[in-house]
Length: 574
Image (tube, rainbow, N blue to C red; front, side, top):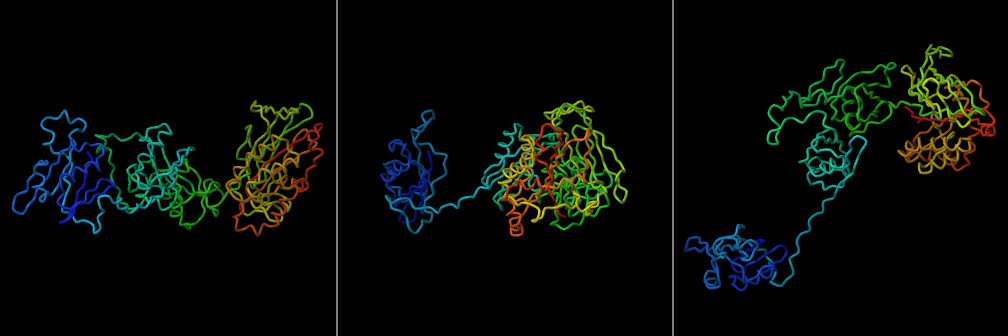
């Protein structure tokens, strides 16, 4: 039976059960005790309960007795504590001996404790209790590879259940996952409050597969043989390293706990990088800034593209050995694709070359890249070139003879050359350069990202792209746009893009259309500066035909040998 608490003073007794209170004068009579049984224990029969008490009086020793109606009145003034037991409780019939002479295992109900100044009467409503301050839940997101799941959790509750739930969602045992937050290993017995996660409304954890067998355990605890020797150092050591040695740390990490990376500064000579190692679980931005004495607020990037957040680690970014960290964005030409539409089946040779400032990064179908000195820059740097020989069909299908592959288009991407001049200039004022071409309010349109897909659909169709090309263009670039709120974009004149990436096709096409987009994010605080571009965005996007230099009549004539290309890149200013 649930415990009934009784506290009293010289004149009153207060009995409380859960949120129900009763006040009776002292001494408590037998009938009052039976009343409290009916009030507090509705499921119990008052005739089938036993009372036991501890008596205390100044002139006698402490005494424990079983109370009944006959002796209650005589001993009531000396009752110091009281117990109540239901004789018909489940299982009571199987116990030996008279039930009413057994003691319950509950703690004594103490009397003579100080009472509050205002006690409720027997029929008064329960005294209101002080409301407990509600705990605000926080959102905890756990990432495991490309999978992530968000949970709303109580920050005062241990994370054991959350980790088990996440592991079940991944269909792996919990013990095979390691959890990290801000570079620190998180144990299930810790709560978000213990870790300080509740300082903000959300937190992001990274789950990592156990990279090595779990240490041998004895009775659920790691064996002594699995212990590690503590380090003499007080801080995690991440250092520039020119050898394969792994630096020490206070946790005496194994080699698997470190990742070797390369750092490329904007001031580096060509592709000269510096090797260094960090713990996979430590804060990467903080480590790189410390090692290379950089400003703590400097922007750092993985491979010159993905920005490293303050809470990112090598684990959360899934960095491999040898990954490059830069202090500058590296512009890449993204997914230019070349379509061939001959009026009848024919064999064609496609040759593409690049100015020395950039080089091929990805090709499909794969083809050998050659270095040539034809048309080199003043400082004598070579240019990259590549060739495909294909059988082309009027519907656009291509059969690459080198790889024996059937494709819809020829795909290429490019990145800056290792010896690029970061602030170099194109060969002529009209030439496009991936090094210094940006969007301006005078030559771009400003779009709210939610409107970008609709705008591109109208602009690309106005420039003569077929439905598959329009769809591919939008679906490729839209995820990039959605990272921002506003973007500025423009299309490069063909004559300028041709000087940066000359394209030759044999036999010679009747019409070549090369559509290349340049875009960059615009901060809301900069909108006033882009009012001219915003006004231009409401105009008919067909004006881009004249900007790019497109002969729309020839572009749509199926009787002509047509070559179409589209691509783009993000413009980033240093």
